[in-house]
Image (cartoon, rainbow, N blue to C red; front, side, top):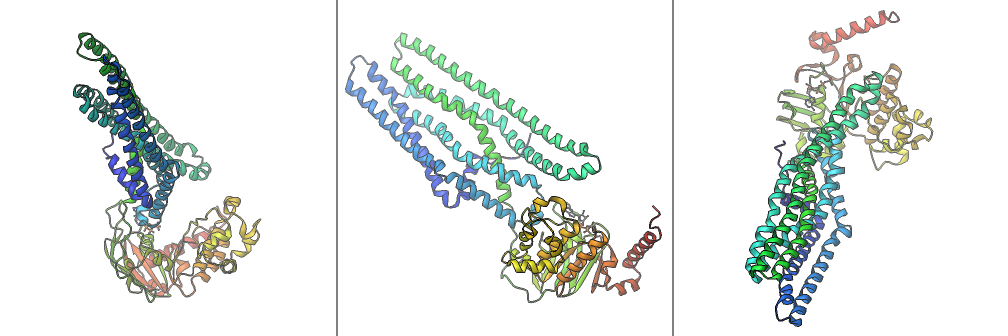
Length: 593
Ligand SMILES: Nc1ncnc2c1ncn2[C@@H]1O[C@H](COP(=O)(O)OP(=O)(O)OP(=O)(O)O)[C@@H](O)[C@H]1O
């Protein structure tokens, strides 16, 4: 059983107010109206007793009967009016607005949260919070609130009012009504873990489904469709198991509750009749008791049924709160603007949240503005991490990273990202037109500017050949764009963005020779007069770099230009030699396999 603590109803209420923003007042007002409605309803129930008393007394007095009857009618009308006003929040669209506000707020959080935190979630998990948890929490909060207040307020009002009319009857009610509470607690304790577990299991299922579908082409290619399906099947089975246990845990208390209500009825009827015969109880008292219990049994039974929704709501709020509580990067004041685009790392140490091992150790470098710097080193040595830290993927545990002598922590994230363009090996294209995909580099760009960038990136020719040219939607042509073509679209984006710093993460390593030539030409356009950092495995592609950083185990081992490093006959030289040998072997053995 999960030890994770669910948000309480009170926590959920506070979060609802927090996210409701300008609707906060309306939610409070709606809850106030609900409470008022049930106070009047409780009083109306309690006054059944004096009404019945006026009917069953020996000397019947119509005026008395009419008085209590009218009072009950008036109270019921008030209760009805307040309930109507309280529900207005749900019906007028404010509840939907609040749900919308929360989605926007979560969207903002996802946009601005540190990337390291973002990547700690799987895509399906975030999807599940935004789509399912938001609905299940806020919508339920609005709808369940009415039922919650009914059960919480009506019995209390009845008991208090009855105390003034007939203390004995009030004492019987005190024993009868709260019987429901332990059963309610029993049911919730039995099921609350299930809701959070189901919520987690559903998020995992969603993430596994997305990964399974995305990975299907690869799995088909290697004839392993079954292997990955096992993970998906496991997630599906986990959801089934948790739901089974949860349903078992919740249905028994419900059956017990219903049986108990019936039993209580019969017992009170039997004992009450006995007391009437003995002359110790009036018919009016017994009837009042039965009417009150009958009127209360329905909401009590219903409430037990909707506590499941309460659990779902609280599980949803727990996930939402966890996401909202993620701290954004602190921007240290005063916010400053760099005067140039040198990049420096001073004694930077860094480890990922998920791993205590340092990926960078007291790492210091100085990258000159408008220079071309290459980062080389074995796989896992920390090359990509260096570039991620420049983009403030996460903050280093030690040391500072500066651009133009200004700590990147003193820059707004948006400003920092304006300074940097990145071209990755894997290009992500949005399901929009090619034109808009390029325009993402500079949303205010005119069509002519987009076209100019596309031409500079050597993309214009193949885009013009597409069925609808620049208006072709990426989704329409599916995977028919080659790796090199996708690369050139992403380079066009970067050319349009025209950032002073360009990071290239092995953009040509997966391309065939012909595509590589085209992409390389595009890159040459992009990096003109820019501070460029390129991560490369094939050393021949960076031999012209101004400075080459050789990284191993997160430490800078060598640096200099190609000639310096070859002359040094150190690690770079060994790597270069090894690659040259492979290249020669490939040339010599061409056609023999
Ligand atoms: N998100 C992450 N969480 C935990 N560890 C990570 C994460 N990303 C990278 N690492 C680890 O940090 C180390 C450095 O990774 P990095 O990606 O910077 O290496 P790299 O030199 O770019 O490797 P490659 O050439 O294979 O891309 C590796 O040991 C890697 O497993």
